[in-house]
Length: 259
Image (cartoon, helix red, strand yellow):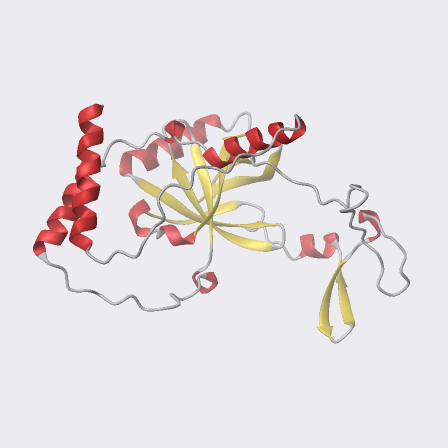
């Protein structure tokens, strides 16, 4: 697995060199765009808007438009020069309880893997965080952005979670009115939740639509017709909340009886 980012965890004077690796894989089916008549691939070319010449990655530089059609060029060397020593490390700012970090701020996860020789310092930080049930809040420059990070300890190692900044989180588009609830409605809802509660095991969940999509693709390859999937019952607006809760509760109780 290729390393996504290299750096060191900086905790005071302690430096722990690590590599950050993607924690997810892309299992989705991807489609290519084709010309409707020839069935040939649609290709996108990068070209100069001035002379129309096609360009390669080696011909492209970063430019910031400070006025209409006026750009200042920023080279990779320029970008490196403005990085401080702190920017080149994952420097820990503080420690906090994981419950204090709202999940809406989470962006991406990476595995933090210690470099050879850094295992002991890495393990010291991991165990200390686990013992106190805390996470490290840190910063580092990745690409051209300074990222806010959380170092999250697990039983196997540590995960680096990149966070959105507070000003990147959009406001709630509409206030949700707080409705008055009857006690029996709330009791019924609690009972339904209780009946449907069991330990979360991630391995039990799969992308069922992707499985049907793969099957449909194979049928098309073999010249077979795709049969319309079972649509089930059409969803209606809930008029009587108690009726809906009672029916749902009855279904879950029957399912438990059959298990």
